[in-house]
Length: 238
Image 1 (cartoon, rainbow, N blue to C red):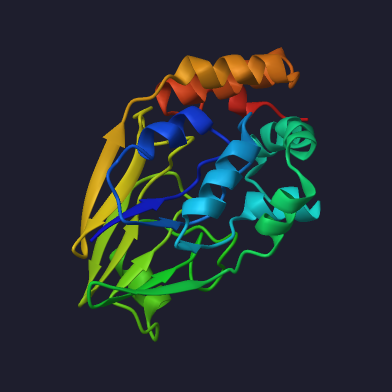
Image 2: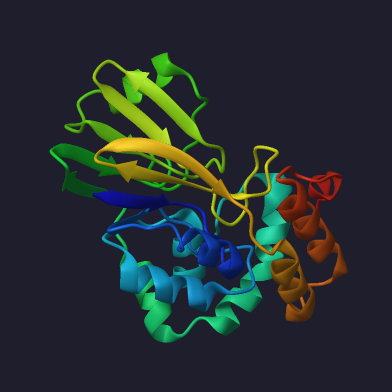
């Protein structure tokens, strides 16, 4: 079985469309389907149809329930800049889908038990952890799973912790590891394969420019999407 594992799509339909061409039998989505990107509805619709196991991310909750996203300060102004566009472009049905997503997911695939959260087990929506095996060993202690799938950081991660593995597929729609290509994982017969695929970034940037979020936010998000690295503009404060 080939399981497509995606996270942090962030309303970037051209990126998700490219990733979705990967042959797969099932889809696990680790949240943050929306936020920052210009095409939230298309992304929600695809996940709703294809997702085998889907958990809620902090931007999913924020945009569905009108609560703070609790982003880091350097990104908060961008989340706020795009939030009105997301609100305008999501239907009531799509907002309900996002609001109803669970914080945890479990799957039995290819003889392995898989646990899924957006961020970290002790704080499924918001918690950040460094890529440190000792810290993660404490975090996953007591969780009955062979494989722990997480997202949130936008940076791929593969940690072996005893007989368990912690896997972060990176971000489909907003990578932050210096590689602008969409990042994802394929579980092939239970074994993780980290993959990247190029997509038409300028389609996303152009859609952002036309959305009305403003030149400053478009420039900052455009540089992040083109480079896979936060731009100097992200130090902006409001």
